[in-house]
Length: 109
Image (cartoon, rainbow, N blue to C red; front, side):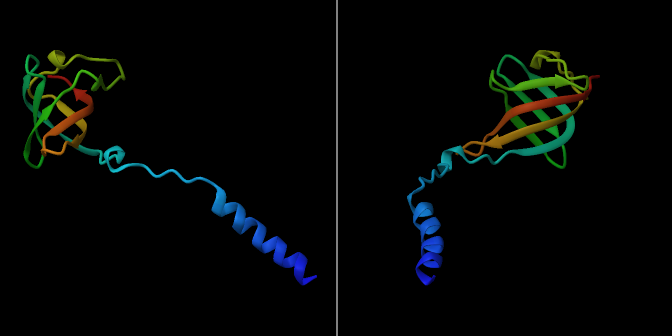
């Protein structure tokens, strides 16, 4: 009886030790942040936007960034107006630059 119980306890432990585990690398860790604020300036030629929340922040806007209006329709950076209220999802690169990944334009002035 002790042998059967030991086998029932030890077998799952041995199986757990043989299952491969994959860890996510540091470069893949998602440090996404979100802010709300008003657009101070838009520079579509240099792919940058400046937003004033509790502080004024400048964001680089890569071509992969998703910009939508409050109804969920796609927009271009050049369609965003100064004074618009926006919600920005961003992360910081290794140099400390703010990289915009997504933005919802709550209202467009």
